[in-house]
Length: 202
Image (cartoon, rainbow, N blue to C red; front, side):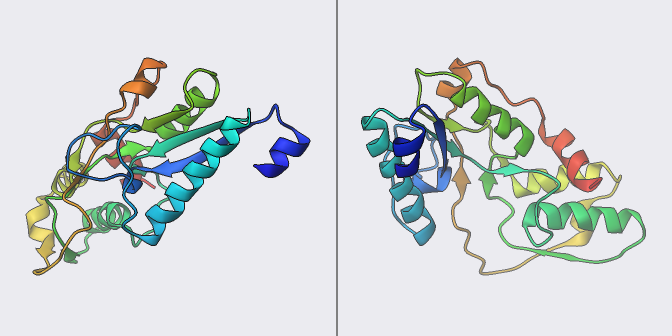
């Protein structure tokens, strides 16, 4: 941002924030909620926001989008969302494998990454709002994701999943309140089942 200030101060800068950098009580989170530095990841995200605010105070147009959980077919295969989707692919082709999972009651957003990218564009194409949560505002559980993926292959997920005892999730529920970005005209277009189709067909 220092280079932008010196060499091209009219350039817009976008900083990626995260829903994980906020204090999470399970209630919908807005961009105005309190930060919580509870991991190296959240500390780094919080630091970048304060840097953004500093340079914004100097006149730069620096935007921060706090992104909540989002998915695409580019997700790595060891991530739970892709792991379930790929397992469903194999099972419909004859695999009898068992998927080992932790707490499937954990709720988070399952927003298509392409929609989130559209939210970023919406944010930086205007000059009135400089920080906004970007998320669907709708939380689904991992169990909901299982149901969606397995409904596409006509199988009962219960026959292919075993739950690990003693698993402690990072959180029980993480969901946004996207009222600010919605007020700029952005809304997600891909629902949970359509996202499951994208992921299982990748």
